[in-house]
Length: 415
Ligand SMILES: Cc1cc2nc3c(=O)[nH]c(=O)nc-3n(C[C@H](O)[C@H](O)[C@H](O)COP(=O)(O)OP(=O)(O)OC[C@H]3O[C@@H](n4cnc5c(N)ncnc54)[C@H](O)[C@@H]3O)c2cc1C
Image (cartoon, rainbow, N blue to C red):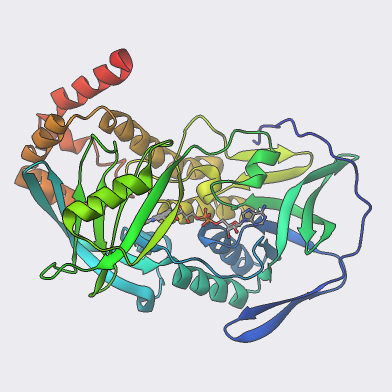
């Protein structure tokens, strides 16, 4: 089931008994997680972020002994405002409404002078990453997950067919045994590197916190297509009733800051602070499941490129990937279920390939093609649930077919 990658063997480290007492500040209490003895869990998860913590919680709730190892010295997160689809509720029915800062029920899209509104029948949700991570940490701890901070994954050591996980805790090297390893260590994944596959492709994402413009409906997000600047788009997302984030995704090598500064100046938005990072991109050619010696290794979240490349949203798809990986471990899911999220992401990769060919005139035409049947369709089906319905768009608006063929032709023969 798992392809065997070539993994370079490292010198065997002396087995050392872990002797540390790790305390993390957690809900203002200091929780002793581990005091001496040997770390030996059913499942070790690398990375205490959304995908890793969600996988850990589900596995612990199914009776597994799970440890999450996090490189940072504090289980906390930088400021980052997220917009996610209501698909979040499909994957986590009990998602706490208290951490939703804003609901979005209108998407306004603009290209040149043309614009169109799409009303969402179920609103998109605006959440803050730090609160999401803090919530997931609480849930994982309540389910019995051991949370270990200041613990960096370094690689694997294989001795006599037995694989162990090499980590650095403070300044000492330690070996950890487990039946499974889940790599949820993000876009620059060290787990991914250790199994010998290329880094996840990624693009720069930059957004500025600004005051919400006077008169702006705080339930409306706006997207501007400006293909001279980026094949993606600019956006304004209200993060609460008073503030918004204005940002863009650009391409590797672009001067993203200069592009955003110019856009902010044009629209007269004054930046209060910036949020930035590399956004992972799905690529269907890369595997996500491996066998390293005798240790099954699964990548989830950004480490697996489980991100919609149309919008580079990775939170819900990372949760879906985590859920599928956890389900495979406790025996609920078979491999085809794990492929479900991949197939959804493959569709986004195909759409992105076409969008990358769009000219300003094509966007103007596209906006004109948004007849009431199409906008009604788009209001019903969120971006995390497109695959089984997407073809219907060609029935609702037959003009999409020649546009799609033209873009496909360009992507194959002109680029
Ligand atoms: C500025 C910005 C805005 C974004 N906005 C949105 C949005 O609006 N909606 C959306 O859906 N997505 C958004 N994304 C994408 C989203 O942030 C990611 O898809 C999501 O965070 C992926 O989560 P993850 O759990 O896979 O990894 P990450 O959040 O990257 O977490 C990885 C964790 O692993 C830890 N780690 C790394 N290396 C090691 C190691 N060697 N050992 C131990 N631990 C390690 C890290 O410290 C980190 O805690 C945005 C991304 C950026 C950069």
